[in-house]
Amino acid sequence: IVQAMAISLSTIPELAANSTLDSTQYDIRGAMRGPGGEDHVGCIALFRLAHESTELCNLMTITYDGEEASPKLLLDLCALHEQLKQDELARGPEVDYGRGVTPKTRRILLQTISRIGVVAIEGTTSSGTTSGHTEVVSAKLQELFQAPLQIILQTSGTCIGDKTDTIFRVCEAVFDLSSFSPRLVSSLFSSREHQDNPDYRKAVETIVELVVSGYQLASVPGDTPDNTCIQWGRLRGALFSLFRVCMSLCLSPLALEAVAALNQAECAAITTQCKRGPDSPSIMFNGDVIGEETLPAGAFVEIIHESIANIIKKRDQSALSDQ
Image (cartoon, rainbow, N blue to C red; front, top):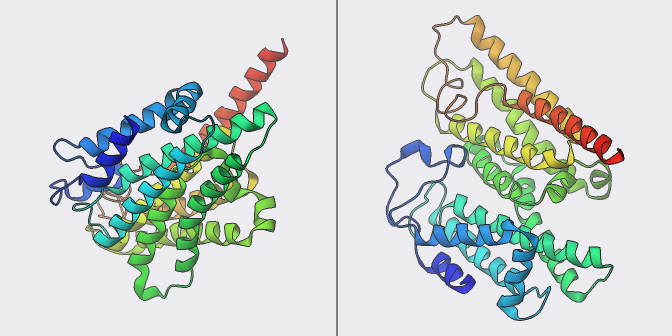
């Protein structure tokens, strides 16, 4: 079954022609689907098998290779992901039809790979044993995690003339980072990791600065956003997704500082827009960039609200367990 799913993903294009959904093709609005979509069904099935339970995830690994904790399934899926990523790059920016699958589908596969890897590592850790298999799995997950980080670091020195392309590439990389486990994503906002790995600090600064600086677009007159504004809206949604992944472990002080900076910039942009009057148009506050159909204003305030709710929930659970 797993092999059949992988073959469908590697050989059947998800979209044979351009989508008729126009701007709704982007990740923050939901993924595009073509008629049939056998490859995507296979991807969802892999995702369900891996996430339904730890036991079922382990069973996938055993039945695939006949050996418990074998890295073969993960390595084969990593090779498939690399193929799909190369197909995506060959199609070019914003071209989601033709060979391969949409970025959303590829990221579902990436989440599956991350889940299989985490279960394999946690299984050996809980049993108190380590093996060469665990080291292989851990190294492969780190390799996958580093790939989008390197893309972000490469764009940090890009000239202003390539602003739209820079935002697009950083956005795609941030969505990829959001596909990994909460523990791995949270390391991006760890003070200790920033000391040990300056690339983490630089990558996070690049992402946050791009989103914060983008709020200056609120002062640009007009009512039709250009591609730069659209891509910035997607990047804002990608960063929101990244914070949401960290929520289960509670946001670190560095993450909360970033959220505070984002909220301040968004409030300033809202103030600028309000001063123009209730009937004034905006290239930012509309359905294509910031709005109910994409990611509404105040989204980063919601991050703070959910963080507080998680802290209260964990405190109450701890109190109940003590009783």
